[in-house]
Amino acid sequence: MGISTKTAEKIRTFIGSNICELSPEEKKNLGIRFGLKIIRPIPGMLIDSNLSEGFIVTKIDREYVESIEQMVQLLNKEQGVLIEGIYPDGTHDHYFSKGFQV
Image 1: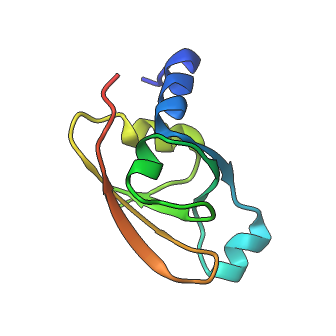
Image 2: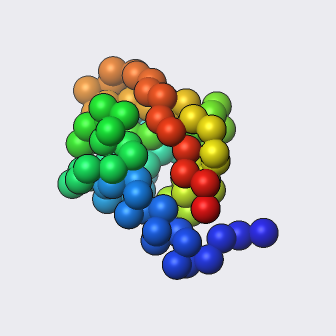
Image 3: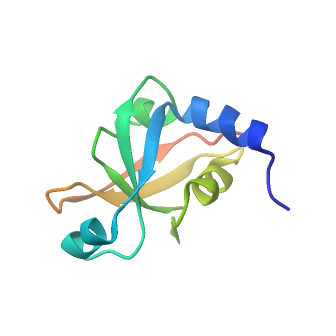
């Protein structure tokens, strides 16, 4: 079962960042098939985890992230999550973040 739009917006606000999907060209240049880019960060869950602008989230808890809605669902956990990704320069990194139980 999916989550409501209101719940998804609440979680996006908690995440603390605007997120956008990558263009096919960006994916090709980085050699990835999936990912969401962090843009215009504000204080919140992802930024508190030391992720910075431009970081591309490719996996959460080892699951590929294909959409913003899926990202919200993967972060909707009581326990912490492992966030994996890549920076635009090709540097891979990972972070740990608290989950957000709705």
